[in-house]
Image 1 (cartoon, rainbow, N blue to C red):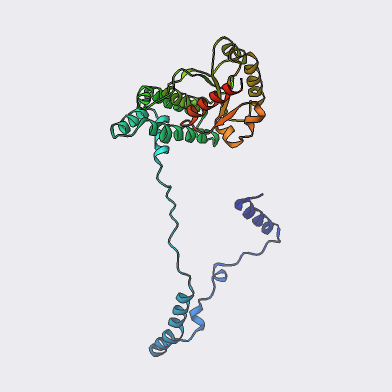
Image 2 (image 1 turned 180 degrees about the vertical axis):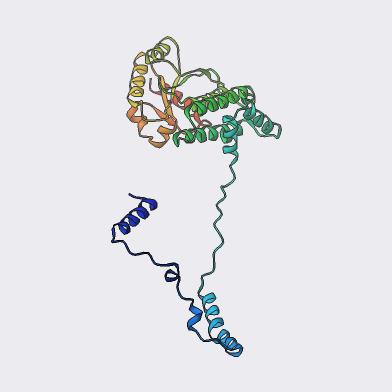
Length: 297
């Protein structure tokens, strides 16, 4: 495909190949002034011509001209609070995002609201920026690390907000060994801690480390956060071997995360017992599953 310059050059080349013409003199090249062929007009005739010919044509032209629409607003929409907070997490100031959260707390915003309506959406925003190649992996990793730091700093306050909770149950919460997306897991773990659970959290370096842990320690529940379909075969093997080797022969297996929400049928195909769609209800759902597992004995 040629551009305008190439097309112009080609047209010029074609003209160059034609037989040369004898150059005209300067007088020959200048057109004869048009006013030389028209008789002079008297003032009355000029006025008549303006009234009867020129003005009607101008009016007609104005009537037929479409009304120009206001130019579309090309300004970008103002960034949302989530986008601004994600930008703070990505910024050069290591403490800017945390300072923003402290200010929200001072205004009376609960830690639960900060977790669910700020940190979690900001993490999704960062993930979307990475997937769209607008932010590089290193920057997203740094920003998510700052979000996790904020979450851990608020953990004690979050536990104090709890009105009640179950005590004594134990859970192992992890991602599939080798996966990298652990922010959602950390969020769910905070809700389990607030509900009074004894927790062991991943990620773990290998399948063997995971299965050895459930073999040597009692867990009522094992929960996996699944972010994509890249390691489903490994997940299925993890669940199978956990059931085979677990010290608790009635251990309950819960799946959660974006992939499970998108494809809930994976719960059955992976060999798990149930799914959890959100961090708030996960501890209560896990407690209910324990009661169900006891009824199977």
